[in-house]
Amino acid sequence: MTVPPSSADTAADTAQQALDWFTRLRADDLDAAEREAFEQWRMQADNARAFDEVESLWRSLELPARRVRQAERRQRRHWPRLATAACVLLACGLAWLQWPALQRLGSDYATTAGQRGSYSLADGSQLRLDSNSVVDVDLTGATRTLRLRQGRLFLEVKHDGRPFVVEVDQARVEVLGTRFSVARSDAGDEVILESGKVEVQAGDQRQVLAPGQRLTVSGERIEAPQAVDAERLLAWRDGQLRVRDVPLREVLQRLADYRGQSLLLLDDQAGQRLVSGSFNLDQADSALDALLSSQKLRADSLAGRWLIVR
Image (cartoon, rainbow, N blue to C red; front, side, top):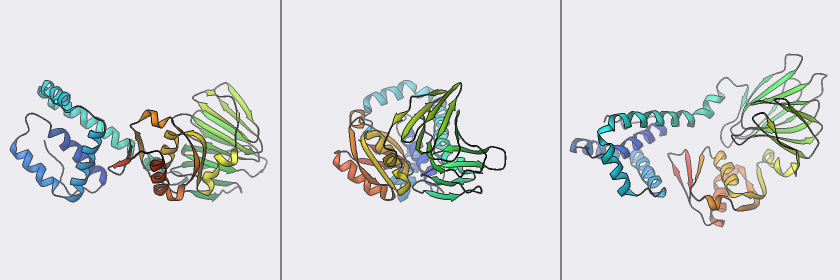
């Protein structure tokens, strides 16, 4: 195996080297030269730290070492094919980690992890973005259009005689002078109306929202609106996360997002606990530490990109 030079330019490169070495060290045909090369590589502090994080993740997942060795013996003749597959999976994983940065390229407005933004649009409307959010804006046509590519936004639309449409995945939110938010996530898109009136369209379905209501959209299916405490749900505008009887997993994910990390929660039962409270998003590290302590959980960071909670 050829391992990239230890003077990696990025944390992702170092993490990849650590994963490569961790896998190779468990092969039956590892020779003395490779072992020596690994020891030389690990002498670098960043490399040693990345390797320790990989080992910690392995232990936390509690994979029986005996079963792993047996599987490796059965598969050792297929090592080249397995190595190729591992490299492909790793490349896909690294590309996924870089997706937020790629989304920001060429966008009109964007924020990074832990950052919020406020913008005055050319038509006088006010746009606010939550952490890790990306939008494109076109105000030149007969219909003003904004497309949410990632994250969460809040809009205060100024009336100028033209309709204003927000596009997110397969849904369209049409407004004319109102205050509302739109959020995009893998679990489904969300619309919350603070004041005014909006109509949400997805496929053949249409739904009008009243102030203080929220609805979610999954693909082309619009869920029934629900009455909510819009002020509490929109507290992110002031740097606050206020929750009431929300599953712990969701709260941990929001705090991890603000840290620019993906959540790996190893205790599914703990993730279902309902929690209430107020958390300062501008001090996400402290908020996370306090929450973990109250729930008697602990967390580790892998390569700065994953938050592993157990």
